[in-house]
Image (cartoon, rainbow over all chains, first blue to last red):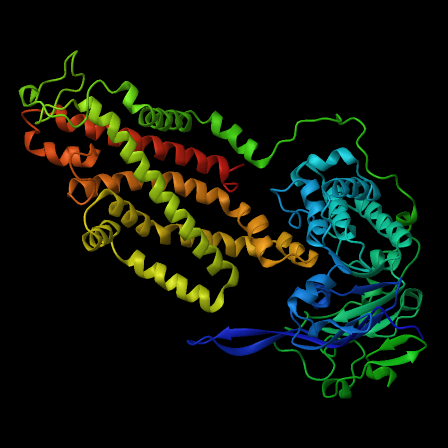
Length: 322
Length: 301
């Protein structure tokens, strides 16, 4: 088996809750609570889950924009959590991020040219002419025109801004791009354009994606494999066809049953989940999902299910299959 | 989601002119500033006094420090437009030279507090934790004193002179800018483009100077303009108390203090320096308010 590009082991992020007179820690929000997965070179791993399940936190921890509380992240076999900050800065050349909000992720006081030039300057491209050439190239790669370089972000639409964000991530020729809900702030018509752009770029530059989203349809379209997160844990991980055809975990089944089918004649049983997502500061004992699970058993309330391989490459954390 | 699979042409904008005028955020602010009549009036007042200060030796009709006791307390006339003071010096001349001092004191002291205050504010806001606590508490302590009282205390320690008055005024303004910048940095730091800058691999110093500071500039400029007005008043107050400029320097506050005994006999000796202070301060205040409207995005729309 070839070495995976990224390997994540038991990654955790606990945010302390400060309280009391002296600001002592009175509790913890377990935003991510023991996540493990690998990303192979050239593939797209989708990460889905509802708001607050820790998917963005996971993505940010891979880039060390947030420091993990526990766990290991290997990139090409190197433990990136042990790197010093200056070593990490050099490492960032290989791993880039596309942000969710194209309105907030571009500095409003910089022109597009400056935005795209910065990663080049930071990573040591000294020649001004070369940089200018590269900026033009990048703009064209993402489907904008070179004359857009002199404009400011506020002069672009959301979709165009996201293209600039993508161009910025591409500027340093990264190997891995973490796309944190790159299309959820965009109109549906623009979403498809940006997704297709991401796919074209993947082929052209041999990129690996970690694609974070809450829209199952979007993830299915772009991902080779998909991980489903619930309350800081991955509950199911599989190839995308298998996950969509044969979901094993009750949470995945419920999620998929909520995807609308564009056909009025097809009737489908919808699984309606009762209640709300429990608070990550006080997650339920045992399986985190047992409070809402339609198939919960006694065991689920006391024992946390192991994340195990059911079929070839199909992992699930559920007592129904243990 | 099947339609997602269809290929779509890249976004192009064939109708847009190839060489269009780019509207930068600063240019945009200047446009809305220009529409504000009061702000423009303020700017002209400020420009007028700055101009006077620069060309003072060319336009002043007399010398500001030569005493001519024979001309004592002359009422305004064609020869002395603003009259003369108790030593027979031309008040117009002294006011013209006084503009140099007031504007110099205002601008330099504010520049000093902006530089020191912003640096401390940026450090406190960006690095947070322990450093933030120390810097913020020092600001709190300075702000706990009434500003003019603190200025008087500083000047009495350093000794009365224009330079020391300037230092005192700069000092009392430091926490105002420090706090302002700190709070702005705290909010800018949360913006996603700062995360993006980190993800690119920028050093802290580059993030601070290229991203955090430029986005914190607007409130500094506004507060700076308003602070110049306050600094001019404070310099005049210190001068009035004899703690600022020393004679024969034609400082407006000092002129007021020297003439206060003759307010009934020779009111022009008081009215004109007072008017000069008022107009300069008014100019800076109007300009500052206009800048706030033009630069503060929250006021827009």
